[in-house]
Image (cartoon, rainbow, N blue to C red; front, side):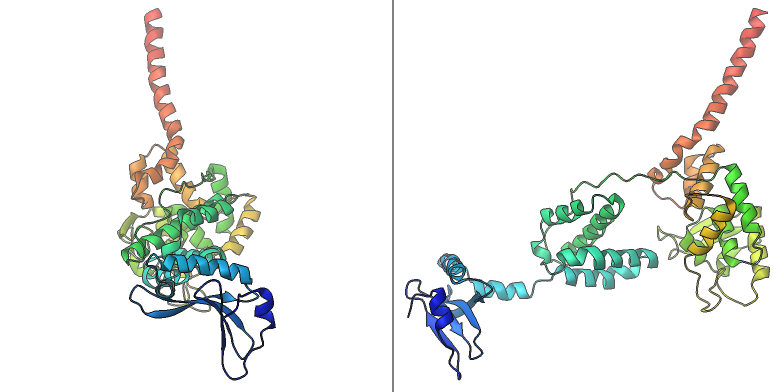
Length: 387
C-alpha cells in the first residue's frame, strides 16, 4: 500500500502477465489498476448494504488526475456509508433509455400516424438539432433547463424553435405513457411569438396568375395550381388526390381521413370552375393513373412543384407568394365577400374556430358596406324631414 500520487502512478511499471493493483495507504478502498497494456484506471472497492464486495471505476489516468480521482473516491465512499451503491446505480443507468432511443421509438411507433411531410420535418429536426444536443442524455435526466437552453439557442428562428418544443413535448408525453419518466419537462415553457403571413392575391393578381397558368394548357402542375386556388385545399391533399375521391356529377370532393391534416373525412363542394379544370385535366391525361397529378416517370404522386411555381410567378410579375398562399387567397376573398368564418372554416377543414379567426379582419369591407347602407337610409330620411 502506497499513497497514490502522480509520480507513483506514472512511475510504476505494469506486470506483463496480469493486472497490477495498488491501494492507497491513506484512503481505504481507493486504488489503481494497471493493465499489462499500461492503461491505468482509478477505482474504489467496497461492500454494499448487503455486504457484497464490489468494484467501481472512477476514470482513466490522463483523463482525470490523481487528485481528481481521490476527490471522487471520497465522494462515492461517503455515499456508500449512507447506503448508496454506485456500481448498481451505474448498471441501472445502462438500461435507462436515452433521447436517441426515445427518438427512434417516436418515429417507429408514432410516425406512422403522421403525414409524410410532417414526419420528414420531425426527422430533420431530430437529426440536425435535437439529437446532436440531447441524444446521449438519459430521458429521465433531462431537465426543463436543458430544454429551455435548446429553445433559447434558436430564438432567432422562432418558428423552428417552437416546432422543436412541440416535437419534444410529444416525445416526452410518449415517454411518460411508457413509464420512462414522471413528468414532461417541456410543459410550461413559453413559445416565441411567430409572425403570421398575411400574403394573399388581390383581384388583379389573381387575374394575372390565372392568365399565366392558362398559357400552359398541357402542363399538369399548372392544373394543380388552378385546383389549389379554386378549392383552398392543402398542397398535399391536391398532389395526392385520386380520381375515385371525386364525384364529378354531384360536384363533390371526398377527402379521405388519411389525406387531411385533421385525420377526418371531409366533403368539399366543387365550383363549376373547379369541375371544368378537372374535366380538362381528365382529357389531358394520356396514361391511366389513379392520381390526378402523377409523376410522368414513376407514376407516383407529384412532389413539390417549386421550380415551376417560380417560373409562373416571374411571368405573372408576382413577388413574395408561396404556393400555400393560394389557400390564403381562397379564404381571404370568401371572407371579404361576406361569408361567415364558420362556413369558411368548414370549407378549409378547420376544426378549431381560432384557426379561421386569422381572416376576421378581412370582413371589414362587408361590415362597412352594411354600415354605409343604413347611413344612406338615415341620410335620405333626414333630407325628407328638412324639405
